[in-house]
Amino acid sequence: MGFSPIQQRKLDEAGFLVLPDFMTPDLLDRLRERVDALLTVEGDLAGSEFKQEPGCCRLANLIEKGTVFRELLLEPRILDLVSCVLGRQFKLSSMNARSANPHGNRRQPLHCDMNAVPDEAGFWVCNTVWMLDDFTELNGPIRAVPGTHRSGQLPQEILPDLSAPHPQEVLLTGSAGTVIVMNAHLWHGGIENQTAYPRRAVHGFFCRRDKPQQQYQGGLISAETQATLTLPMRQLLALDDVLNDELSADVAVRSGFLK
Image (cartoon, rainbow, N blue to C red; front, side, top):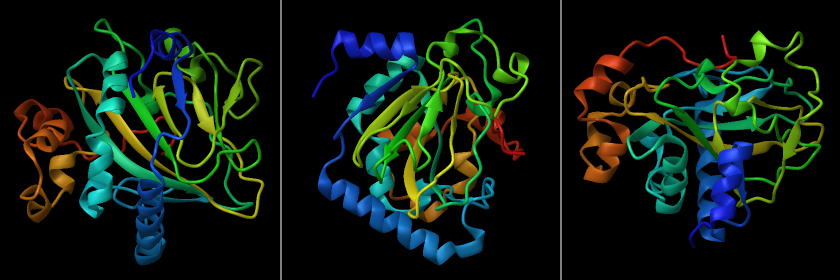
């Protein structure tokens, strides 16, 4: 499965590309099973390696927590699309999961991931969202404002109310098994889950190699797990990259809206 020039142009112009039925049923089932097991085991501590979010259940450091997540890391078709945004020199910035609680989560403010704006070298953040449940208009999908990745501005510099509906926003919906590739300079945010069921997704977040990781993989992944990783995995995680060690060792939370 390759990607057409039309799809690549949509990613470039709109800032996102929705890929229906991208996951196999087996991969989808294994991801659901592992995410649910981790949420149960970690309980109130889930997501605490990074940051917890009111009304949601989060997981962080997923490369450490299951081989199924390492499969996502090396998916070549997704990596090709990430390279359309970032160029060929990129690395994993973090791999997390987010479950929007039934009738409980707050609307996220419009934000850019890591509060990032493009620099003289271009775009430097790109997110991938692996839908474990259907994303419907009612269960907390992502809203995004097409084209804003090219504005060179953060939404808080322009908008008086980051939680208010934006006149140009669209909802990114799809069936379970869909993957979204998103230029993370795009103004976006999750909305409220109005249903009685959680809305789960895994987020594989990438950045250019000359930028800090959102979550420093070298400081999170255990020596035991590192010993099992292939060379391509180590390269994407920047585990043997001295520059990345210097850039990313600061443990401060890097988020567009979580404080």
